[in-house]
Length: 415
Image (cartoon, rainbow, N blue to C red; front, side, top):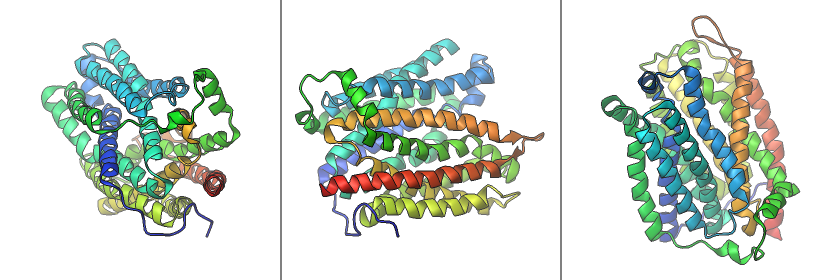
């Protein structure tokens, strides 16, 4: 068994304040992820309402991701110069403003502008949140903290999307965005009143450092480049499979459109519990060890999944849930391990650049996946098995790169 970061040991329990921080950040991430995910399901309602084409709708969806990637780079030079709580509130307010503009958008052009605003602010919040986790939670506790926050993705899939679609059906497509703003205002008030200032990194940063020089230092640091490349490799697999997952389920596995929500809800329920469980396993048995176990299990499931034909609904649901369970282990293991790469005074900038690299890698991966698969007459997805082998190759390369990250983190901890 490969060496792992952290020996097997009983996890150190969270303090009451740490539990509050995790809960706040998880709920915050829930609103961010829901805002990002809700737009695609709204397509059948939104497109005729605004009289826009599929190309225009695709531009609205991608505008958020593109602006989020750019924002991460622009914010990196300033990310370590201020109290992280103030940074979090500033960008969260900007995100809520952008989402509110989506909720009142009367035209396509206005909506496109609103999505860019939401992406510019919302795309940086994740990196600030993970920097806060790395600041407040030692590596021995970090897996459970990040695993719980990661479960917000599954919660948004189980709770947020069905509620959002119900609102859109009865009150129009603006409704889900206004709901997110209302929830966001509540969590924003609690963060402002309950979260303590997070300033430890300011005591280690050189006074008056130039933000552009700081950005250059982070972006050219060889140690950090290893972490960035690992982050991009981790993002590759998920972004390759995700765009065509629903089409594959419907046209290749034979799952009816009316049964598709059941499959996603079941997967989301598994994800809600998988994140905290995998986080506990990471803290108990080691981050890299969890990543190795999850990767090989994921590869085994992918080989089977991507070669399936017509499949009973119950088997498709079980297979998809198991696949998502292993993916959760990879995300928690890799994210927690990568969080140990940057030094305290560089953590905000590192996380911001890492988030941008993830966005850009996801965009390229989705594009490459579109070149590999082909939609046959009738909708059947061809070469999905080939796409699976490409994703598996990326996973193997990820393990090689993560082995280097694991060695760096252990050497730093020993020093």
